[in-house]
Length: 131
Image (cartoon, rainbow, N blue to C red; front, side, top):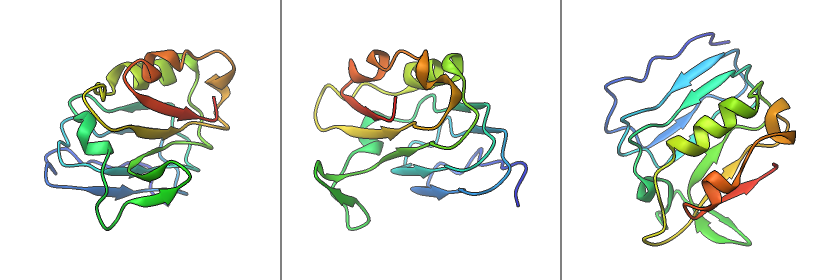
């Protein structure tokens, strides 16, 4: 089980799945090719996604998920320890997708979902599920 993960400098990384570990922090800032981040069932207290372009989390590539929303790429951070401040910081870090498309952000089962402000993300054309 991973307790730390350093992905700095992996700017060509498109998919990161680090679910079901013991991570307490994750920084994917600057990963400009990232299309999908799956990090549920950890112990995350913080997650940073600065400089990850909005388009990177939206697409119809072969690896895109299919849902009632169509094809999408997104971020999955449910089942962690993210408080309202950490979730709001994540929402603030997200790039603006208002230029086209949408992205999904799954945040359920985090202690902060009762007091977070998902409108920070929805104002940028993100769909927040579980808040």
